[in-house]
Image: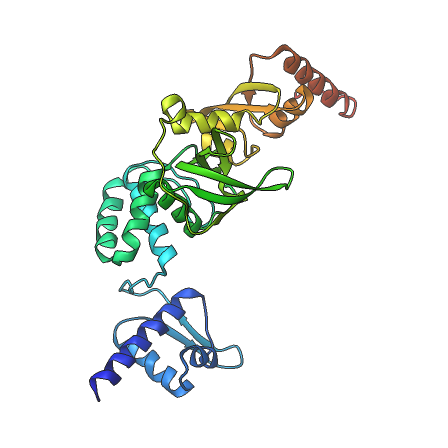
Length: 341
């Protein structure tokens, strides 16, 4: 067998392993079509993977096919560029015990006690990263800032990498931006930081056209390429990007606001609140909920809908509406069921 044939067979085995990792099951003809070989070659390659210790199960019949099962060895994970950067950033986040909420591609927060293990895994992964990916990972790590965890709109890792790269390189960035009224405008900005707050990603940037700092939701912007000319960085507003962005997010809560003490863990409350509300951890079973609404009645409804014990100190109009809700709820019960025995 020639050296080239050997290389081609090895490359095909890696592509076959990547396909088996990408979804639960494949039929032989599907794999043959993807790899441009015969089903007989696929069967031979499956046998080679088994000889190498990879547990590939096969089933027969019309619904038959191949699936990669768990085994004694961990097979090499074949990641595309976005997946590799996302995993490395998640490991870096876990290693510093700093939660990051990003939606689908970059998700989750650090679990206590795994910092050292995460850093070891990160060291191994960074050693293997291609040179072309290292600047993307470095930019994401340096120019993204975390805030309270929770789910939010999915943001592609490639988009975050593009924005982080513009922050790192100090290059002006033009993008199409869709506001909450679905009106799209073109913005010319000097990007400074990416911040995750209120369960969404935001870009903190100096808006050149408006001559002022602005906060942009990342899931609503589409960058125009290539990036613009370099700019000289400005001092961050209030000296703190996270504080500035979270204050801006809070400004859209509504005119009637309160801070409720909720008898539940912060992560439980975060799953039940509107995206613009903010949860502040107190201890394992208690948190503060910063929340607002357009009217006191709507705010009372938000709080009651939590289905959790809470207390609030005000404002007075909210307390009045909570009393009204309690009275109406009690009056709605059948006779004799107004109180708990």
